[in-house]
Amino acid sequence: MRKLRSGPLVAALIELGLAISHLQSQTPSDRLAETAPRLSFDAASIRQSKPGASAGERLENNRFTANLTLLGYVEFAWNLMPTRDQTTAMLAFVPKWVSTDNFEIQAVAQGNPTKDQMRLMVRSLLADRFRLRVHTVTEETAVIAFMLDKPGATGPKLRPHSEGQPCEVHLASPAHAVGVFPPACEELLATAAPLGAVLVAARDVPITQIATFVSALGIMTRPVVDQTGLSGRFDFTLEFTPERKRPPATQNVQADDFRVTTLQEALQEQLGLKLKATRAPLDTLIVDRAEQPSEN
Image (cartoon, rainbow, N blue to C red; front, side):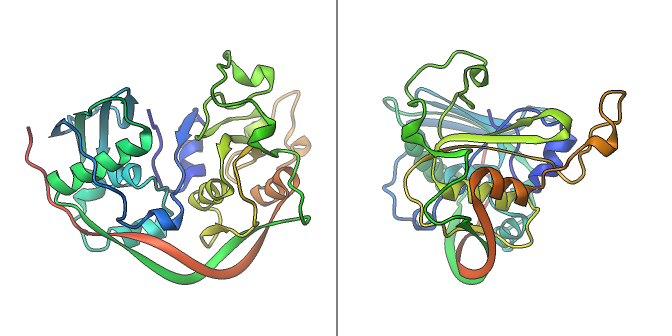
């Protein structure tokens, strides 16, 4: 169940007490286009959510159950984690309810589809029931690029996934107690760390997923892209201190004793990634049309 969606993620984590949250990455640009085969659910119901209903989505075998805004469904279906500016651009031509009104969807598919296949089915459902139409705009823009701090070398907290635990291995909880964190693969997980810090981790993800997460934090003034030249899948952990989060002074920990690790410091020291201001082509998904669905 996804608990946080979009916006300045650090602020949201602080506001919610840094509860554990699963966060999806943005899709690489070449997957934003409408080139995938059309897959559909066998049956689906949609209705406006009741006030106070818990938001999120759940995939279980061949069932998809969710309570999200239409924007949330678009983010799930195209596997996006847009920045605030990208969200503004996405929704420039559609009504406000697209990002404010929640809808409950319960859908069933044949067989046991993968998560990516479920995403394609949600795309079809949105097109049929919300009359959703989208297109992709590619523009060269000012960005912050990830680059390797030392040529050919990553930091101590960024290692090839092939050197870690395979994803099919069952991990006892708590996984971090045996040196494997987080237990699930292909997800970003953010949780509280000592002294007001945030611990972010993932296993079996591309570098682009780390760049997307950093971009979505809202700390950088530009979108973050990957220009490391690294291919393949990685495991990483990243611990840093949000600017507005400080531990209270106690008898054991005084404010003067507290050392803040900024996000930029953590990226360089822990992952071996430095940041460079440059320009690069960037894809943005634009919602052209959306209609309120009829309930069933």
